[in-house]
Length: 401
Image (tube, rainbow, N blue to C red):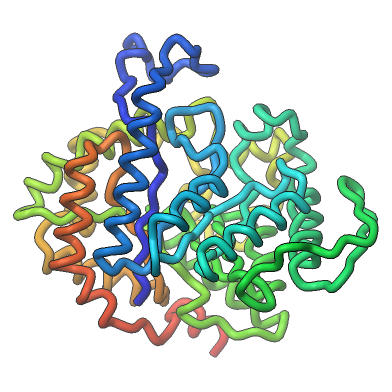
């Protein structure tokens, strides 16, 4: 099993006081609340943590792209990858991902090729559509998201693989382009796609044989529906699903006991859910349909009992309490090393995923706790996970039998 740590690079200060007793952090968030020293410290500390991940033997680090929010200071994940490439030796750099609809695709192809060269072939290039907030920031119509994504994907992959290419599209056009430099990995770096749940994203990934992360990791039923539909789409395109097609997002934390894990990590999970998650954004599937970001058929593949999970109600994150978290934690990999290792293995086996992306530092977890967690997890859990291999995809076997 390959073990990644997924890091959102949250602004390293708790901003709950800015809510003034309300449910939401103000958006847009004024510059008067930004502290440059805190931002500088945030980048320094996370790069130090990634260097430690490399030294401790983790397989990779994952990070993504968001804008105009303390939720995550990774406006340009490519800058973070370039920095990490110079601080690490073996660690895979999973950019998960660049938001294709928002950026000029040839520039992305060039930057990603540079990163693959800088890292000596350690890039995993995630391609994503992003959340509605990012479209408001970049003034891109939500109803153009899917078409822009698919056009940018074709341009980037052709730039990486064609000797000389020309392209005439709806949004971007190029004539006689020969990319320099080229990626180290041939024909190009691995491409992964995060899937929250839309049918069209699943079908695109299946058509192009791209690994996915199925869902947000909270609802097993929806996760399995995604995997089933994905397996069908892969098969229709002449591919067969394997455990290497799937990575699983998992919140994990090792401590002397579950109570201790909740005491140390619980408040930061709550801050992430109640304050940072979806700041200035809307997650609800129905609202996204109204705005043209999602189609009316986007969840047609979901079984009736899992439609609530597919609705992506933000209230379910915002209203999380410590009591709720304590109840959920009974079944989560939070606690002793033995329990954490077994629960991660059980989750990976049930999903059929041979890669996991661990959330060890949600919210503004203090740097010293994150560093200690990286070392403790590496000593007590990481060898167990890396010795385990997931060999089957149970949900897919049910539909492909």
